[in-house]
Length: 348
Image (cartoon, rainbow, N blue to C red; front, side, top):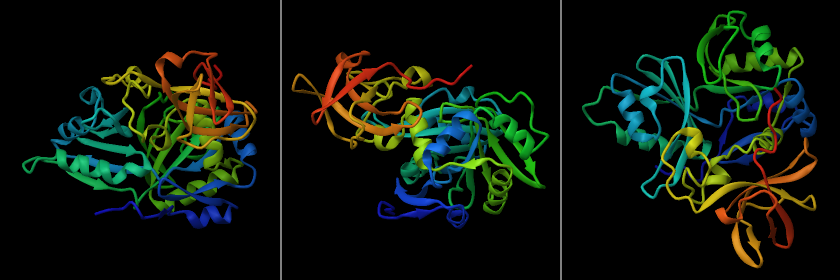
């Protein structure tokens, strides 16, 4: 079944509307772009904490005695080393060596796993998982994307916000990529200590009614909601790729500069995803060619104005021979400079 023309809406769209959100479509979902001033949302993220809706990300439960074998067939990496209560980032790779999904796999029980992936890759990854499950396997694959919500909390104060307003029973020393269950006002929830903003954070998988209650509780306590614009700026500052637009042209783990980080086979290595500083202030469209001395050197992918740097920054796929800090490139006549990654590194 094709879902390329479908546009999905967040279960809590009504809440976001009442909070003043402005919406736009990204990767097949209508998402809150901002709640007024994205620069203020960005500042809150970097200086305190924000709450946001990440329910556009896919959520698939894979359970059963053969669940691990299915996951190992569908994804790269050392999934057999994933212990209960821990999470691991990895990728799905096609026969051509290209990344097809960026996923977070959490082992929530002995034979129970949660796979959270990129919004636009949900149905492809579901198909990949189902094809990996032989007829005689003891495994169940449940798509929970439209029946649950995924909220995020991020910022230097994220840990204290979680303890103060979610559950006093949360462990005091939760480690990065640790997953845990907790109760919020009597309702069971799943949490993972992770963030793709360059800051400390959590992702919370909740029933929609419970997720709304969490949003209401946190915003009443002064935690600012953040939209896609502020979060995407933070992601790019941390040089963390998204499938769309960074990887979808066909990029190997080595070209995405993820092979060492994720401990997966790199594949092709003639290009690399580099950090770029764009002069002039205007953001550049994904796919715009980058040139060096009049010759094609690569192309722009993600590009935003960074409130923290007060500059236009981008990620671009460029030939390795151009990927050194200080290298001067052009994009449609606009000067572009290769810089060291990341643009932003968390304090402390």
